[in-house]
Amino acid sequence: MSCGNPHETPCTEVLDRVCGYLDGELDDLDCAKIRQHLDECGPCLREYGLEEAVKRVVQKHCGCDPAPAELRAKILVRIREVRATIEFAELPAPVPAFRFAGTCARTCGNCAASFILDCVS
Image (cartoon, rainbow, N blue to C red):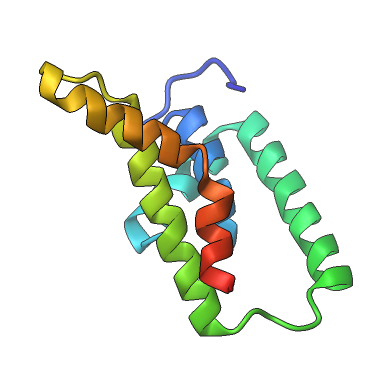
């Protein structure tokens, strides 16, 4: 999705980070970039509005008991680890010695749900 206009922060990046923005997980600089982009880009603003509405409905009907802070922190750490693993796996291997590591990282990246479930058990 894009409005076709150039932005300092690309639409794809904004849409990838809109949930983190809604959840207050971004730092002040990233929040400012997202807000600026949303002020300039109608399609992204509409998508943000949709995500915000879905979050409100889910929170209203399913969010009676918030997750314990310690559990939330563990899950967020695991999500970051899995993202880093996936990003590492997507990098081209500069030398043959890294091929095994890349294969392992892709395999681990496919098990993201298992990693998160390990946190809660």
